[in-house]
Length: 312
Image (cartoon, rainbow, N blue to C red; front, side):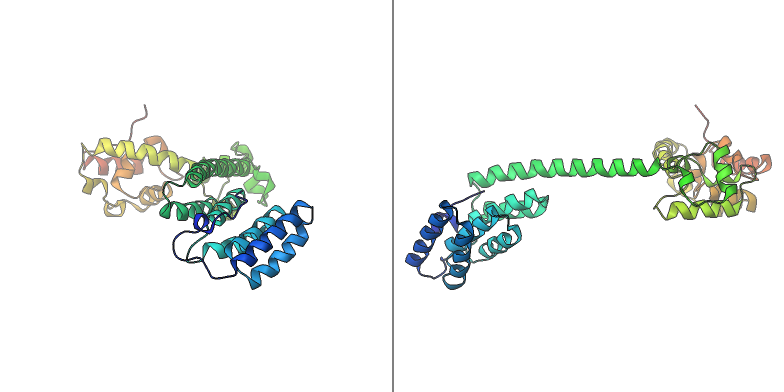
């Protein structure tokens, strides 16, 4: 923290210094310094508060803000520092001290803004340059810590047992038999996989989807993330086999049977390219999707010179 107001020319940026009784300001500062050194900081602050209203010299206001900061009156201190930064000639030391306060509060963007205000006019200001390096390092560390907290919080949520939620007995029993024990496990299964399980119906599906939705989650979310990466790789390979117009063709244009179309919708398949990234096993895992529907889909793909993805 910068303690001295210093020479007005050293602590102000551009423009004229505000009017005021300089001799009186000097006397007030000396008296406040004496009182503070003798242990009467509260008395010094009270005197400077009155002086700031009647004299208003920047060095008086700065000293008041500094003593308030030392005394733990951070909010009031910030108010006075801010007044000094809004003058025609912003107070450099006030900007530097504000930057330190904001950095300590974790408000990295405001701290950086203060330092940039100094450097915009005094690009070679040594203390400001050093502060900027510290602020940027703090910002990187702050964001890393924030990201780590978010990841830990999310992981803790995904480890929550599904038995902690108000689900029907049927839904609970089905999930238990399917070895689905946590929220994270639910993100690894699709609607189609749940519906294909014995005794698991639409009512239970709606129930579970509603519970996940309240937490900003959805069934098969993790699978979708994996598929998105795989899909991009496969689509890049398929571009050498079929045109982009074919790969982007909607499955609604393929004149498929209702059963086949509903199964593809359950899997999130929207285009021919999406369909070509799926495997036979994935399609056959959808409830009511049989060999006839499989042959129908394979024939449609073959008409474009494509096939379902083969497992490695």
